[in-house]
Amino acid sequence: MKIGIIGAGNIGGNLTRRLTALGHDVSVANSRGPHTLTALAEETGATPVPVEEAARGAEIVVVTIPLKRVPDLPSGVLDGAADGVAVIDTGNYYPRQRDGRIAGIEDGGRTESRWTEGHLGHPVVKAFNGTYAQDILDRPRPAGAPDRMALPVAGDDEAAKARIRALIDELGFDTVDGGGIDDSWRQQPGTPVYGLRAGVEGVTEALAKAPPERPVDFRG
Ligand SMILES: NC(=O)c1ccc[n+]([C@@H]2O[C@H](COP(=O)([O-])OP(=O)(O)OC[C@H]3O[C@@H](n4cnc5c(N)ncnc54)[C@H](OP(=O)(O)O)[C@@H]3O)[C@@H](O)[C@H]2O)c1
Image (cartoon, rainbow, N blue to C red):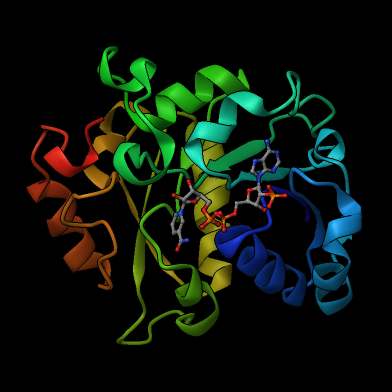
C-alpha cells in the first residue's frame, strides 16, 4: 500500500521502519526537507519527500508531528492523496511541556483530534497517540498471542477506521474501537488508557473508566 508519513521523529521514524519492512511503499517528510532524511531512507528504503508531496497518491497518511506545529503544515497538504485516503493522527496536546496553550482546544471544548481535523481540512483517525514509540518496534505480536497489546482507535469515518485497524493488526497489535472523534478524549494524555500496555480487555476497561474532565496537568 502507498503510505505517506508526515513527521520523521520517534513515532514517524519507527512507523517508517515497520511499514517498509512489511513491504509498503512509504514516503516520509519532516519540516527540514528530504536531504535531512537520507539516513532513514537508506536504512528503510522509504522515499524522503518534501512535506507538500508526502500524501501524493497515498491510501493512508500518518500525521505525526508536535501538535503546535500542525498549523504550520502547508494548506492542502492532503491534496493529491488517493480517493478516500485514511488519515492517522498520532497527536497529543502537551500545553505545559511543549505546545503552549491552544485556545482552539481549551476554549472550544474540542478534542485534540477535532482541532487537528480543522487544520487539515480532512477527517482523522486517532491512533498510536498513547503508544510508546519504542513499542512499535519491540512489541508486535502475532494475532492470538497472549501478550499482544491492543491500541484504542477513534474516528468518525468507519471505512477509514476499518482500514487503519487492519493496518495496525498487520503491524502486530489488536485494536479497540474508541468511538468517534468526539469520544477521543477517552484516549488523550492523562487518561487511564494513555500509555497502557494491555490487551483488548484491559484497553476496553480503561477507555470506559476515563473521566470527562481534561486532567489538570494537560490544561494550559
Ligand atoms: N514519542 C512518543 O513515544 C509518542 C507516542 C505517542 C504519540 N506521540 C505524539 O505523536 C506526535 C509526534 O511525536 P514524536 O515524539 O514522534 O515527535 P518528534 O520525535 O519530536 O518528531 C517530530 C517530527 O515532526 C516533524 N515536523 C515538525 N513540524 C513539521 C512540519 N510543519 N512539517 C513537517 N514535519 C514537521 C519534525 O521534523 P523536523 O525535525 O525536520 O522539524 C520531526 O520529524 C506528537 O504529537 C506526540 O505527542 C508521541
